[in-house]
Length: 239
Image (cartoon, rainbow, N blue to C red; front, side, top):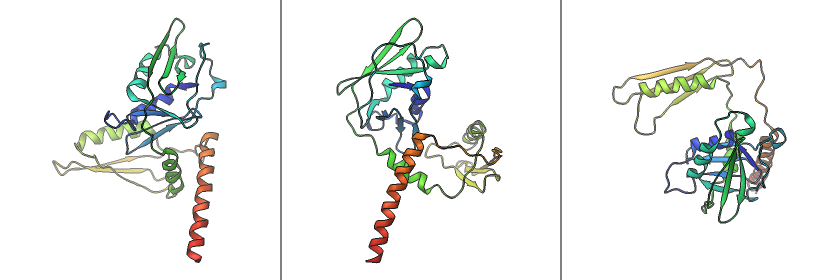
């Protein structure tokens, strides 16, 4: 099975605490998605459409266990380093070439050589990320807003410098409708100064990002679960 550089980008939100192996890892799902979490945020990237990828690798490939497999963060970071400098999309993938109870192996390839990295799978169970995703999406009904994420990163970097905080760095977010923009507020607790940021919304002409088949499948399951819960609650209330 193939995993793209996008799949491996979830390492950015994985826990760096080696004392917490359940989160100091990347989880590879049975269908080829990748998931990582630091306990406060979760990031998921859907599977590669291998019909559109032609990686010059003719060796045997393996698939994750049906229930998924977690691999320590350090191993995946090394797999990223092994990706070739050649930025052609076909080469910016790693192949899972072994998946067993003792070893999970990833292979990268350019036009001259192959590089492999492997480690034992993580024994600790990865959190129930599907439940987290389904619950969060089902409750995300207050509103929606599309902004330029590079503008957001630039603004957050500036606000972080204006209001440094060694703790949780709280950021207060306020927004209205799709055309109202985003207001961000934070405070420098040493000087007492406050910072206020604003980002103009992107005009999408009413178009919204459509869920792909993988996301739709997850949401359909979530809706079924929610409907079941509602039916049970109604029965209890009638009693």
